[in-house]
Image 1 (cartoon, rainbow, N blue to C red):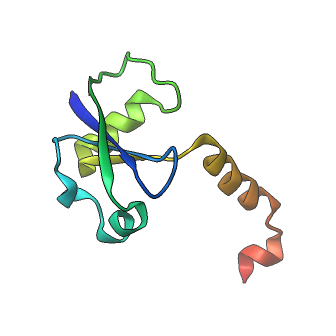
Image 2 (cartoon, rainbow, N blue to C red):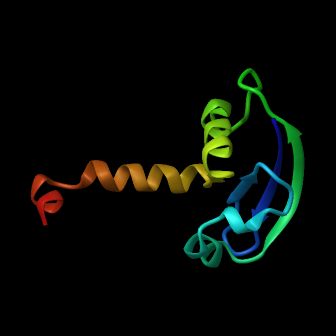
Length: 95
């Protein structure tokens, strides 16, 4: 699948993958507002065998096929969210 990658000008190391070039209308409005302006950085032919440094190509492809976009967050931000979930106590989850 041919896809297009854009970097967020507001969120460092945050990228949006699109199935169609400049098809920003598929991105939810709330996410679009959070990311700010997007700058084109890469055009790539992606398949399930292609190895990506920070993403699973199968997940990216699935998102592109089903919703037309994929959000790539910085690795440390992903870990921070995971760590917060692990630190939550049972009482925190019930609140």
